[in-house]
Image (tube, rainbow, N blue to C red; front, side, top):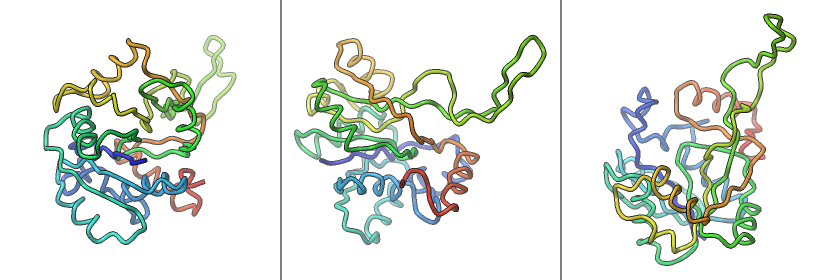
Length: 232
């Protein structure tokens, strides 16, 4: 199975880095996010990747050209202003009719990819999304009136489940995406959910996006330990 990595967005929330490169080329431990994501899947012997490029795509083409690995990597320029659904549709056209993994180029986790695929196969619907708990950004207070009875830095928020990426899609999902301007998150996924064709694989372990410089620095700290949780 191939993995489509969405790598074409502008990454405006981390413009300190993306003025010169697309967000998936931001490095953690001198390795671009793209390489970390590929290694996550490579641990489960999934080694075929299609990168949906757009903004500053030339840097991705150059990196892939010089990257030495046993991976099969193809880069598709899906356009500067194409939305996520449109990028997926273009990649599915490029690949041909087959089941695919899809994920974003700016998130890492210790998701068990083999179990995700097994979950998807068993439920028999068109799409699976990995549901995660958002990382807590602030200290958690437990109060009785004004008295603080407990204070702690929580690893995850209790604010419900969110879209963590790491999708599995059947070939038919291609036909649920109308064109380049379809946003996968706000158009395609709601359509699939309304038609009872979407299931959530609940992931209780590590997950961290890289939307801001603060989050990039957090990932750098985890990498510096020598045992980054997304590779455990």
